[in-house]
Image (cartoon, rainbow, N blue to C red):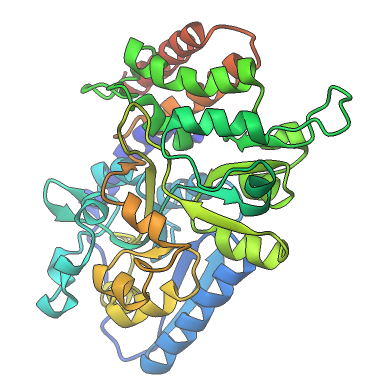
Amino acid sequence: MIWQSFGRWFSALLAILALTACTQTHSNEIATLSLSGWQSSPTERQALEQILREFEAQHPQIRVRFEVIADQYMDVIKTRLIGDAAPDVFFLDAFEAPLLMQHGVLEPLDRYIQPDFDLADFEPNLLNAFKLQGTIYGIPKDFSTLALFYNRRQFADANLSNPPQTWEQLRDDSRQLTLDRNRNGRIDQYGLGISPELARQKFVAQAYGGTVVDRRGYAALASRRSVRGLQLIIDQYRQDRTAATPSDVGASSGSEMFGQQRVAMVLEGPWAIPYLQETFSDLEFAIAQVPKINRRSGTMVYTTAYVMNKRTRHKEAAWELIEYLTNKTGMKAWGEAGIALPSRKSVLAQLGRDRDPLYSPFVKGASYATLWQAGENLPAILTHFNNQFVSALLGQKSLQQAMEDAQQAANREIQAQNY
């Protein structure tokens, strides 16, 4: 697997980097930059391409070739880094950032940043996600948190006037919202849609003081406190039978099963708003903060940065692009698409996201959210968590046993990588 051998390959690459000085063009010729990323919807690509056209108009000496990598994004990026064929600038999720920062394949950005760029305008926890030992390796382009989407019509039909404030209330409401309309034993509408993935459940595992990664970077999934939080999800799914996964209802995502009105509530990010409005125009929904668990507010926060390939021959041009995309003007243009939230506080306020009924629950969540990042080994840990959590969800083993199995398998893999 690419992942398993990546650390060793990076060591070899570092040796090459030490022996070969980077060359940089200083000519007046037009520099063509490659920019790679992903897209969650055609709307996202159109928005970015429009901003890139505006950038090129203002920077006639720079052209940008944007490439969407549709599948296995990080595997493709890692392979290209190893082969010295990586893009000049690319998206980097905070979740993957520790490994690339640690292995020195990203250009440190501190020397390019001028005071008028106003670093203090960024949400500190987002910027810190792309720092290593005080050095900045990425500029966060946006962020998303999770919030509770709820179907207003289904709530009214169940005589529910307000969204739940606590997880106990959420389970009670889910019972009222779960319907077998023709009483044939098959549930037509579930109360809650769930995504059985660590990326969505990490804050639940932490609600009672648990963790998923210990101080040494090893998996710590099976602690009593972690299991206590996650047991809430298992119990609602198996005992209450008031929750469903996308595959249970023939959907491909949480947003889709909510849009199809197969579930009355779901935890999703702001990316779901334009999708629901465009695809399910008759859907009447509202959004609230995630209900408290154990009297604690919690949710997840995801962020992505623009980073520069350390081997690019066009470093100054690459920084001009990153600076343009993340300054106040560029970020406002990106934020207007509504796919994610601007990582600059001033742009958030300027766009009124903190006052918008649909977006404000996401903004409020940023202050207490759990960052989707936990060291170099999180990618290995999440794979085993996801496999074993589904086993517990299906009743194939207890949650405690599933988490012990996931922890052991993940730690064997981490030990092998470190050997």
